[in-house]
Length: 514
Image (cartoon, rainbow, N blue to C red; front, top):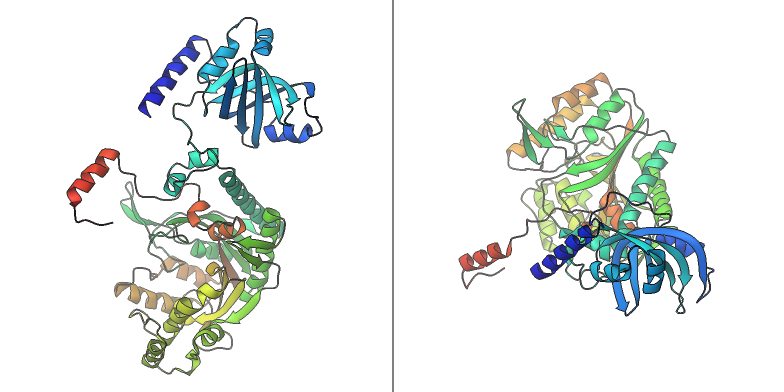
C-alpha cells in the first residue's frame, strides 16, 4: 500500500508539472451520466451523435489496449463508459501530442476526472463519451477496494463509509431512500398543519423516556448537562403554550448498548396533536407510514429479509393482555400479587427479573420474552401497565392500565404513542415513583422535571403524542438487516493501529480468548 501511494504521489507531481492540477478548483458538467443514458437510449449500436457533453466523476475501471482505452466513469447518478482514442485526442488537443499517453498513464482507478466529448454507442451496445478533452479534478492516493461491486469486510463498510458508497450502488440507494423517507414524512406533516419546532439537545433534567443519558458539562456556566433522550417534554411545553400541532424530527442520544436494532445516537420523530387521544394517533401512524412507504417503495406491499409485509391500513390491534395470554396461557388479570405472577411465569419457563417488582412489569416481561419477536405484520399493541408508562394517561375504563400503544413490525418496536397525561398532580406522583426507582439503582428511570410539572399546572389540553423510530422504519423500507446499514456513520470502537494490536496480543498472553 505504501508503494502504491508513493507511485500515485509521483503521478500527482507529474500532473502538476503538466499544469493538470492535480486538485482542480472547479469543473462544470453539462449532464449527469443517468441523464445521458436516458436521453440517448435510442442511439443504435455503432452510431455516433455529434452532441457536445461534459461529465465528471470517479474512474472505476480502466482498460488500455494500444491506441485505444476504455474507462468507466461514475458520478452520483451512475456509470458511463469513456471511449478514448489516441487519434481523436491528438486532433482535438494539438498542443498536447502526448494527451493520450498522459491520460492513460497518469490516471488511475479512483481518480476524479472531468471529460469533454461527443457520444457514440459501441458495437457491443455501450453508450460512451468519445473523449476530446480531459481534466484531472482530484488525484486519489489510495486505491479502491479490489471488488468494486462491494466491500466484503462488513466492519470496513461502516468504518470507511466513503469507500462503501463509492463501490456499492446498493448503499447509495439506501441513503437516497432514507432521505426520501425523511423529506416525505416532513411534507406529509407540514401539509396537515403540523409545525416543526426545534428543542434543546443539552438538558439539565433528562426526561421523556426510560433511558440512561450521556453526561456532559458546560464550562462557562459550570453546569452539568445531559444530551436529550427524547424531545417529548419540551414539545409538550409548546402545546401548553398554544401550538396545537407540533413535531420535531431529529437526533436522540441514549447511553445504551449497541446491537442490530440499537445505536446510541439515532433519529426519531415525535408528534403532538392537541384535542386528540391515542386512537387518533393510531390512525395518524397508519396513514403516515403507509404514505412514506408509497413514496419510497412505490407500494405498501414490501419484502423484508424474505418475508412479505403489508403496510396498507388498517393494521391489527390487540391488547398486551390478549397477546400474552394467547402465547403463554397466562391471564395476568387473574393475579392478585407479584409473587403469584412470578410463580406462574417461572412455571412457564419465563425469566423473572428482580427489577420487575409488580404484576404490570412482569406482564411486560412476558410480552417481551414470548410475543414481541412474533409480531411480523404491523400490529398495534394497546393498553399498557401504568408502572411502565409514567407519561401516559390512565385508561378510561381499565384500572391499572394506561392509554398507550406500541407499533411492532417484523418483531421490533417501530412507534410508541399515548393519550398524554395532563394531570400535573398525577404526573408528579408518577415521576416521583420513577425517581425512587432511580435512587434504588435503576439507571434508566426518569427524574422529576419541576419546570415541566409547572408547565402542566398552567394547563395542557387533551393531547395525543407519537414517536416513530426513523432508523428502524428505514431498515424496513430498504430491507436492511442492521441499524448500522441505515446510519451513515454509526458509532464504532476506535480502530487499533497495527502496532497497537500487536502489543495487545502480547499483553494478553497465549491463553487469552476473544
